[in-house]
Length: 260
Image 1 (spheres, rainbow, N blue to C red):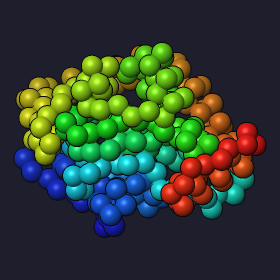
Image 2: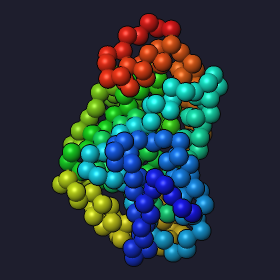
Image 3: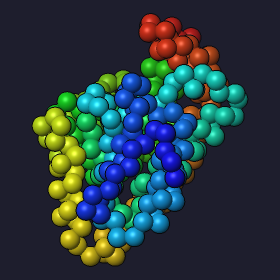
């Protein structure tokens, strides 16, 4: 498949997928979500002998700085839930991949970017990386699995604080909380990810795939939370608060929410 927003490179049976929208801080627009779905849903399963995937962002400022908020402003009633469901479906493809996927977080991983990193099996953060779920600043909630995965990694108490305050955390705090596996010097994220995947690649591939499936199975009974998130996200996209929050974001001003 030909990709507009992804760069796909293979070396020694490890594929590096780079989200290539550097000018937009690699924001997840509809095209990028579609291409991620095509790669993880069709292309990766068809490639035999792949030992791992590194997922990163172009440039040195952002892994993925969030979703493309300008696209959200055009949503009609009902389309918000559809948008969230599409994002969750694609991120489930990553989480359930039998091939290990490592996020090399080289900058901002906010909103959908943090959710994308959390969908990967392991996370390497550069020292300048920043993580957060700031959707409440826009009158929204996380819609691509953030309300469910963040509590799995760092616990309910801290996850609730980060999602309610929209605060960011740096790489060292993410390491302390258990959100990332390693912190590297800036620019060394991909090299560390490759080192991990080479170590994993020396193990039995069937066993590796079964470990991934078994760990994911631990959380399977709680999938109602994901469905709730889809509905709640869809509702927030119909509110006046969202229109105000997203418009203020685009116009680079403080939002004036009215609780409507």
